[in-house]
Image 1: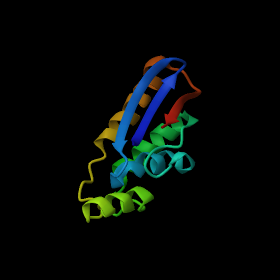
Image 2 (image 1 turned 180 degrees about the vertical axis):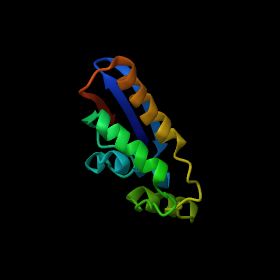
Image 3 (image 1 turned 120 degrees about the vertical axis):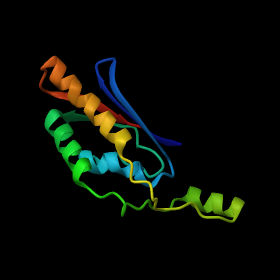
Image 4 (image 1 turned 180 degrees about the horizontal axis):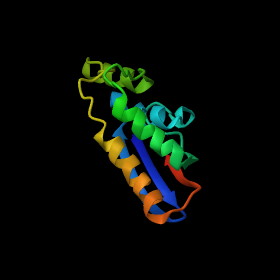
Length: 127
């Protein structure tokens, strides 16, 4: 389980991002790109969305200016299962506010647009 996010043009992978299923920051990329409809809790829902350069630029701006320390992950049925096995609940917040993996993903997408001069969009798959 986890969030596997891939930006592609045709069969060419431009960028890849992975966040764990129970990492409270796993929602950050969805929020910054405005693609929360592809968020499925412990993973993406398997949706592919076309993302424009303007969306990439806006997401970079959002992540460089935002405080993500208040992001909280919703509890899922898996949390209850793990708590039943271990007696401990997984945290829904984190002290980790490092969004550099998301920024690296977005910067790779931006570099693709800059290098190719292509307008249009990238296909981003949220799995």
